[in-house]
Length: 185
Image (cartoon, rainbow, N blue to C red; front, top):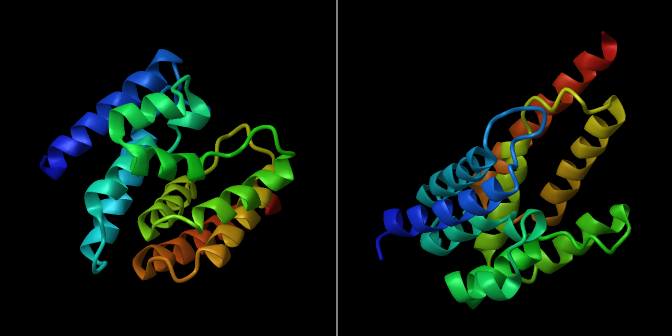
């Protein structure tokens, strides 16, 4: 299967599953699939700058990265549709809701670090994509926690993908300036 076909299968599947629950980007009417395609775009660009990168695998994980966490799709359904490697990568990226909130990200990062570099790259790409202007409903405290979490992700996944790490450093700095500016107002 060509990469475009792989992309189309995964984005369509993910978009349908997120749309079934009428999921949108926070504080907007924008379909959630836009976030998924943005993460995939980061992965495609990283792949063009990275030697020995399994782009087809990474694209599927990128487009499906929130499907177990945010939809009714089960691991078994995902595995049947996209294979064990993709489902396992997505599972590592899925926070365990039964854990206390402060343990969820460290737990996920420890599982991500056991996966292929492409799964780690998807985590970086996901956070890069999310380091934009935060939702209006977020408090200053939540923005600061998100910034701290981004720094944790970058620290923990250092050595994964130089291209994405450099992008994330720039995004963290821009987000930090934005948060500081909004606090001063």
